[in-house]
Every structure is written in C-alpha cells, then in structure tokens.
Image (cartoon, rainbow, N blue to C red; front, top):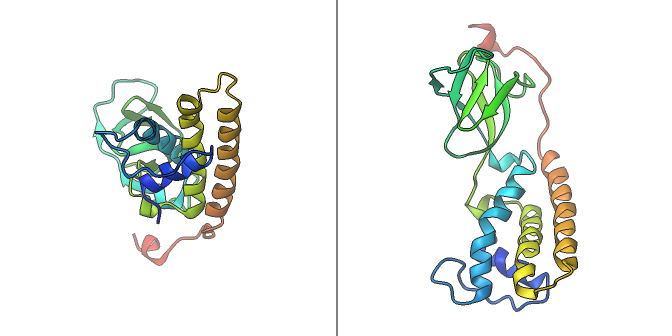
Length: 196
C-alpha cells in the first residue's frame, strides 16, 4: 500500500511536478517536501472526517465526567483519538441494532441522556496500510489542492479549485465503495442478549 510519501508524490504528479520526494518530515530536503509535510495532516483529517470509513471506525465505552450542565443527564470524555463522533449507543445496543441516541459534542465532552454510553466514531488513522486504494487516490487529490498554491503560485486559484473539486468527486466515489463493503443486519435479539 501507499505510504505518506507515496501519497505526497502522487499529489505532486497531479499538477505536473516531479514526484521524487523521499521524506515529508523535517529536516525537509525541498520546498515541495515542506509543503507536503505541512498540508498532509490537514488533508488527511478532512478526508477521514468526510465519511464513516469502515477501516477508520472504532467503538468504545465512554468514561463519565462530572456533569456541568442541566440540559443533559450525563457528560463523558471524548476518546483522545476521536476525529468525529458518529453515533452514541445506549447500554446493551450494538450499532447494527440502533441508529443512536441524541447527544451534543462540545469541546472534549459528549453530553447525553444515556448511562453507560458507547461512542461509535471516526478515529485519526495514520497507518496508511489501512487506507483503501480509492481513499488514497482521493487523499492525493486533496493534498495536491493545498500544495498547488504555494508551488504553482497561481493567483487565479483555478488549479487549486480544480484539484479540490476532483478530490471531492474521488471522495464521493470512495465513500460509495466503502459503504458497499458491509450491510447492516436486520434488527433482532441475539440469544446472548435474550439471556441477560
């Protein structure tokens, strides 16, 4: 699978630059490497946040905090690696059985009315071997849209806009492919749950 350097080289190739970076971490060997190192984390976070990717999804029981509000019954800590909450599940429900409970995300806290809540969320995946090939392609275009500005110095911004639009189309295609990777089970009570 593609490494972060491979993705940066792919991004450079999208706007006609030599794709010969060997590293995107400091000390930088070139201006292109510096731009890639600066913009890669932003491009990655945006692409991860855009869809509940199956390979970037976690679920965890939340740690309760002292509640400092009156409009919700409970306050929980957001997991440290949480990029975007997707669903809050009540105690005893799997994400295939429930669309989730209402919640409010504020800072490092989740407020809700569920005791023993579980959060389904997109986490900050940095291991590029987990990315699907279609996601890599989309991320390459997103990164190229940020790198093109300082490298091409195009005052019109047309190149950046075209690359960003292409990244949006590629993300949409990758999301459809990812959504077709699994299906929800019909709602049912499992034998284990019935025995509780």
